[in-house]
Length: 229
Image 1: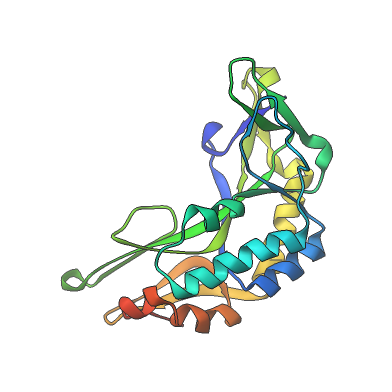
Image 2: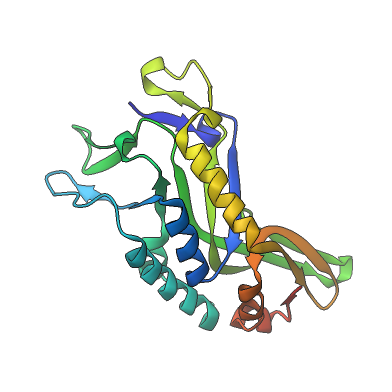
């Protein structure tokens, strides 16, 4: 039994973009006991292998990503790919399904799950109009890839109900997991404020104190004469 959520249900997402260090992320994941499931394509006939990876394996992937974004404007798929993943409290809701006409096996979920992926911050500035555009979903002239963003659907509809009924996701265990993760992130972060030569802008990205200095030292911030507050 699968479901549609977020824009598929027409009701959007809860979302939390954030910059925290690998050490801070490790503490949060260990504290919530969340199961980490990488998103990957597996051809029909091949073994999917373990659905879940351990926290240390994931943190090693995040460290590679974190180190790369500090030193470079370009982060390739080999670095970003392992950071597209799913969080769930309950593994019983996870199934591996093969479609007769498909080349790949897919993961199917009987309850809503938390999707996490690399965060992109799009930046655009127009000096003549005193404009500083910062967005985590849009498309502006320049982009900084770093940090992560979590999504959880507000409403879902199920395949076996022909998507005729919308269900509030607050009744499911992964909403409680999402809420717990957000609270832990908020405890160690504040809103990211980006200051240019001409203007400053408060974003909806959460950033830890440990990441503010690091962000100021990135090639992207130096090239565009930006700083955090």
